[in-house]
Length: 136
Image 1 (cartoon, rainbow, N blue to C red):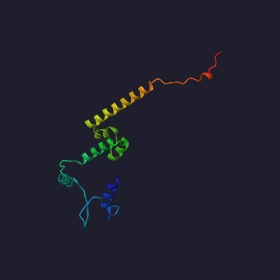
Image 2: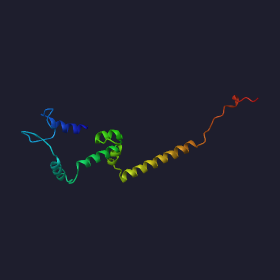
Image 3: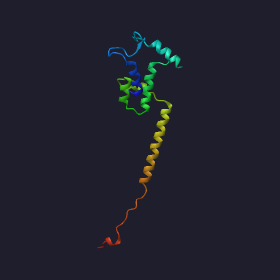
Image 4: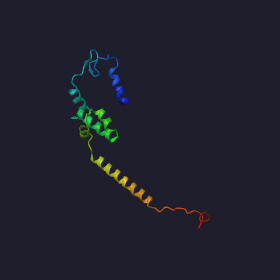
């Protein structure tokens, strides 16, 4: 959990008992939030993102973790996916990802060609000095 998320959750929990709900409505007599659909709909509309689903955030998290190089098993622990197949449905591959893969392959190919060219350069092997050679 990032420090920013921790701080936000901490603020939601200040003054509450361990058995109280984290997300509540009302200041005088807080009631647990049982259904967030209407609040989510209003929030996304105000943010200019009507139609955004909570599920979309899960997909974005999976993709962003993959792009950041987070190991699959670790990303799955965050997204809650139980199988690699389900996780891979969320870690969407974009055309930009494919272009990046081609660039990496071209770079690796160039490096391999350069290392082969260096290894094919004739090596100069010094001979021992004439005094060290004995003729029989």
